[in-house]
Length: 227
Image (tube, rainbow, N blue to C red; front, side, top):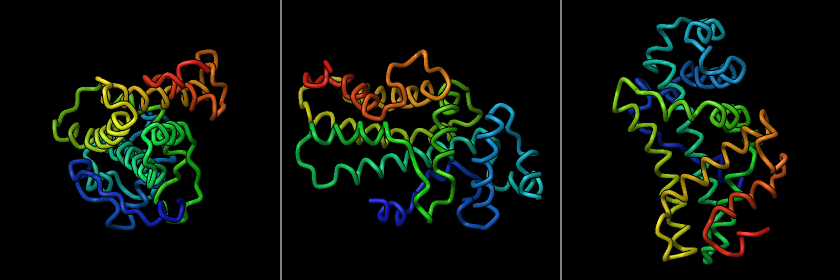
């Protein structure tokens, strides 16, 4: 599966950038270094001025690609959600049983990324960390542009819709597949954050199997309700 993931090409919504950063060397460097800098600084302290210093370039150059740091963060988050969807696609390929597919979804959602892919544009370990720690801010802030919000939600919505279809395959009578899909995604991200920073707020204790079982316990399937 890793080799297939290395060959994938992510098609992100054009509203997520002014100029496609993957189209040039400096654009790719902006993405690569912004992940590192947000990881160390945090989104609130991150600025284009600091990024320009790291790049030994100018803020003007960065603004050619992104309107502001929030649009950049939405781009990074959408990249992450798109990778997750690809992982779900590959993990559930050729599986006919909906319940088994749902188990694979939980496994993907609770797995930590690695940097085995030599073709990846960014450090995917750091990408997962910053999205889990910073992405909730993208849901609560009032953006200046409606188009920016639509651009961000398109990747997230696509992932939710795919998982919702698998939920219905596992239980065709379940009434809230979209709500459950988004809850599974958000719960996995929150548990990832809690195990790193607020361990007293979680019971999974950095165990992948425990995290996976917890996510499955949110589903209506009886075999996952008790553990």
